[in-house]
Image (tube, rainbow, N blue to C red; front, side):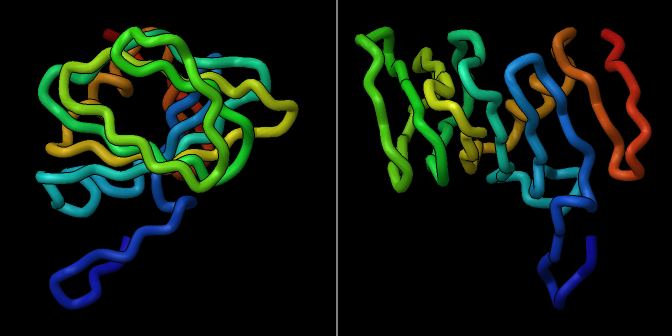
Length: 142
């Protein structure tokens, strides 16, 4: 990470990788990295044919932007819908949701949380393996 005036410049290789059975997350902005507290931002790569569990973020809104791949999305316990690249989804705080990669290629999404915080819950999940930016894998302990 580099400072640019009052801001920050972060590349994907500068941050740890959060590995899950369904894919990976690189949080490019979180309070510990950029100092931003009102917003965190990351890139998610999801494995074909896999999705994450239904969950919610009680105190944070989430924005999901589908960059590539084929996605099934469930919001607010409604029947799932297929979305295509270019879709921007707002998930209000407390609303249950999940995404699943229903295609044969890696699905890439951008995620943002406001305020920052849900990324720390993800980091502490027993299903998470943290790969530091230097490439050395460490298991998360809770």
